[in-house]
Amino acid sequence: MTDYVVDLEELGRASVAQAGGKGALLGELLARGVPVPRGFCLTTRAYDDFLESSGLVAKVNEFHQLPPGQEALDAADAIRLKITEASIPAQVAVTLSTLYRSLGQRPRVAVRPSLAYDDRLRSPVAGAIEPHLNVSGEKELFQAVRDTWAAVWQPRVIELCRTTGTDHAALKPAVIMQVMVHPLCSGTLFTADPGTGDRDRLVLTAHWGTSQGARSGQLAPDTYHVDRDTLNLRYKRIVTKEVMVSTSGFVPVPKNRRNSPVLKDSQIRELCTMALGVEQIISEPAEIEWCQISSGEIQVLEAMPVGEIEPMPAPRPEPESPAWEEPSTPSWDDQDGDEETDADENPASQNGAREPLSP
Image (tube, rainbow, N blue to C red; front, side, top):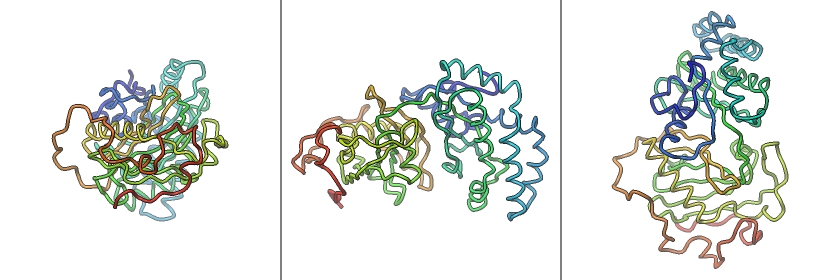
């Protein structure tokens, strides 16, 4: 669209320098037919021009000449504070306003960081910057953008760059803006175990409402381990969920859902099938943030390589579409002798932790 704002549908794998790894992958997924909420990306060019218009280029250059230590942290903090207060360049602001208004009447949006570093789909400091949710109105949007830019200068990011050997000067933030969805449930899915690197299983978490509480560690989600080849459940742990995060904040979980599994077996298979398709697109083990909306559709909010796992071996031949037959061996639900029910039904049948089905 412009040098500053690009529709997600116009991005692709080659757009990392412009839109960061997260933005580039969302565009690639959209092009492959993966459901992704509507939105656009404020490019790294907007950040560079903002630094110039706010008179910060010299201070940024000075910071990158400093050795690690308190002086560098103080300099970074001064830059961060200035970014949160400086005006966004007029051309950037006008372009951003126009695209925001095209999404509807004061739409609520999620504002997410997308970091560009070399040509990597996942920056070394991915996950260090939190998104801003439920942003409404241009004033709030502009501040969320400034806060996202400023977060590149927070101590956590500076320290991560130091410990991972990342050149902070080469780290450029793009900003993704997507229409807020109102999920029934959401979570994360790893196509390889992020703790062990085991590629024989997928690791899935799920919670009612949005996934922010679980991602931040404030809420415990349900956890599922799924066999990659068969999509059979290997482990399933259901926890009591008394509180969830909605688009308006923390709210009580309805009583009839507190001890219920968030996902049925069929939904787990659907999520895992989608995730394996995303992995094929990325060509690496994938970390996916997903949600399910009221229509029942599953959408991808974020996707990136898991990181810290060896590159995938040559793929084995697979059918064009993954099998959807019921597993040849009993599922977790079947082994307990329970029929598969909606999460709103039978709230007490699966309370508490469960042991793995198999080693």
